[in-house]
Structure formats: C-alpha cells, structure tokens
Image 1 (spheres, rainbow, N blue to C red):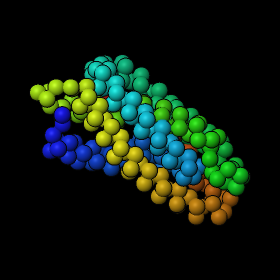
Image 2 (image 1 turned 90 degrees about the vertical axis):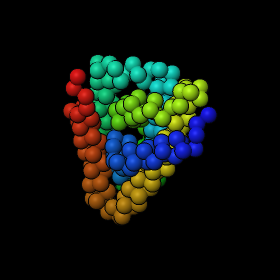
Image 3 (image 1 turned 120 degrees about the horizontal axis):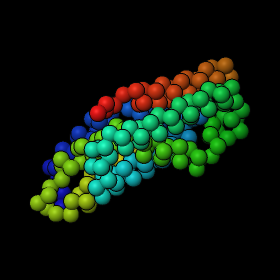
Image 4 (image 1 turned 180 degrees about the vertical axis):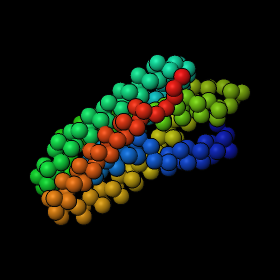
Length: 213
C-alpha cells in the first residue's frame, strides 16, 4: 500500500520536525521538572494519543477544513494556549509542595489519569502537529495505490511512534536533572516554578504566533 521508499522519506521528515523543540517537547520537559518522570511519561502517552486523534481527523478529511479555516485554527490554538497557561499557573502556585509530593507519591500530579488527560488536551490542540498533519501527510500519499485514508492514518501512526520515542527521552532526561534539585527543598521549589514558567511562556508564545490570515 505504501512503498518503503515513501515511508522512509516520511520518517526522515517526521524525525526532523519532532526533534525541533515545540509545544509537546516543552510541555513534557515542564511536567518532568515540576512533577517527575512518571507524570512526564504519562503526559507523553496522552500527548501522542491526542496526536493520533489529529491524524485520524486528517485522514477523515477534517484536517483540510482546519487548515483552510483561520477562525477554526485560531480557536483550537487559543484553547491549547489558555490551557498551558492554566497548568503553568497551577505549577507556580504549588511549587513549594513538591517536596511533600515527591516523598509521598513519587512526584505524581494527581495520578496518572489526570496527567494523561492533560497531555491529551495539549496534543489535540498542538498547532505544530495539526499543521504538519494537514499540510504534509497528503504529500506522501500515493493516490494511485488507493486506500488514501488508510495511507494517511498509517503515516499518522508512524509519526506518533517516533514522537513517543523522542518525547519520552526528553522527559527522562529532564526528570534526571530534577533528581539533583530534589536534594534541596529550596532548589525543588525553584525547579517547580521553572516548569510553571515554561508552560506559561509556551502558552503565550503559541497564542501570539502562527497564521495571521
């Protein structure tokens, strides 16, 4: 259905796009710094699930509608931006409680289910991923081979698997740095605040950039 050459070319482009730090990477790093490895990795799972939903939407034709509608695109972007700012404010408010959370629950933030849904919301509203899916996926489809929605869905799954690998690496690395800060309550509060500020800054950046048409 999809030639190996076409699939390899897509993997190369997807890897380059994923390696450029964007909302997903900064979100995962912020969660790792504020709450530890478990929350970060659970957020990654949620994030990639959200990306899979975007891929499914593109495969079904919804992606082209979002790409062509500035109003719809802006609305989705702003929802994600506001949610990131909210998470950042919450991290700042509770930064001094990180030492207690680390000792009692291994640094989780209200349980894996909550972290998963937070990641999913960020993944679904990630403008970088939605633009990539809507603009790039169709270029790799071989329409002569038929089964166009299935081809696009396959490319979406491959993209999410690659993102899962690299985003998880970012989360593990950031959580490793956090363990050094955990030796001091004062340093841990500082790193919790840093994670919160990263998410607030990311939300503001997403809201202020992007298409203007």
